Length: 135
Ligand SMILES: [Cu+2]
Image 1 (spheres, rainbow, N blue to C red):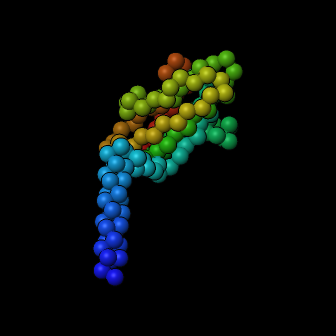
Image 2: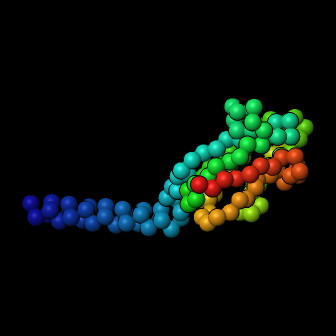
């Protein structure tokens, strides 16, 4: 019976070592899930204008963010023949350029402190821009 116990102990040790190796590997390779966003905002680009998804009566709407929260922003380009992006230059935040029918998402943490940044579409900043309010 002592033989069985020793074998069981070896299996336990082996299991513990494999567990440790997997944990170290996961941490080292960055496989742990990224921080979840606190909120998600979906914007649509249409007719050279930004809209909140489903709120097409409010062009280039003011966007409200809470300081210190992580925001996921999704942009869909529904403007045939036009290339758009979404950028907050003051925070060095920007999606890639999107062709018609394309979609991109970015995540960022809203900086604290008083500021009144603006958002824009980089190629069409004169038409496509709006204010940001930080709560
Ligand atoms: Cu644009």
